[in-house]
Image (cartoon, rainbow, N blue to C red; front, side, top):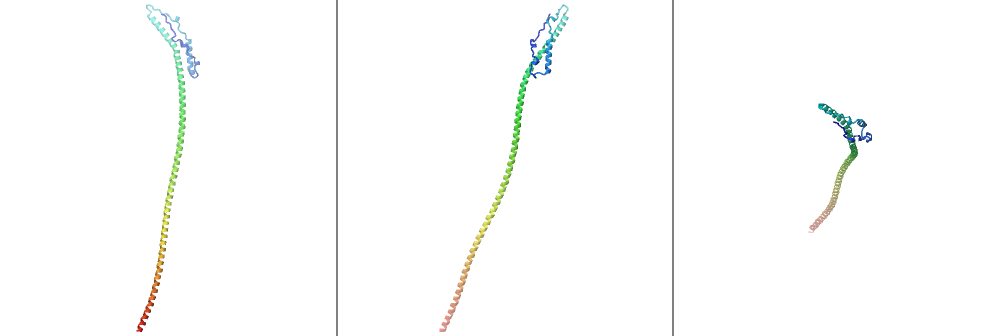
Length: 236
């Protein structure tokens, strides 16, 4: 029986070289093993069909046949493992290409997110600065309002006190004017009473003078009447 080994993947020699990859795509530490693996694969001699030993099974050679088959199977498995190693690395490179693309997309998205975050942070800082300035202006405005309110309250209190004092002063002035008016009225009344009393005194003086004159005339008339009677008695 003759065992013939075939290459399971004829495209294994079409792997891209490490120098053809983009800059920064793979590290230097990962390039060297890839070169070594490809070199080992190229230098590895495939098992030719002529080099496979023929196994002849005789009447009593069952054990020999079994041992030969195990050796051939072990050699084929080792050869397959050596051939599958570059294929696995080629798939890893493809996955690395895909991962690099995803990494670039992720980097762009990350940079976009960072830019948006920086913009948001700048806007937040600006808003915080505006808020602090607004709070400062609001505090100044509140202080100014309190000061104006206090000054206005003090001014209103001062004006109220002055107004009350003015009212009291005006009231006292009116009271004084009323007292002066009453005094003037009393003086006028007193003057009128004095004039009336003077008139009464003059009238009394006139009456007394008239009474005196009448008394003198009565006395004179009495004397004349007495003389008349005496003269009348003498004639009788």
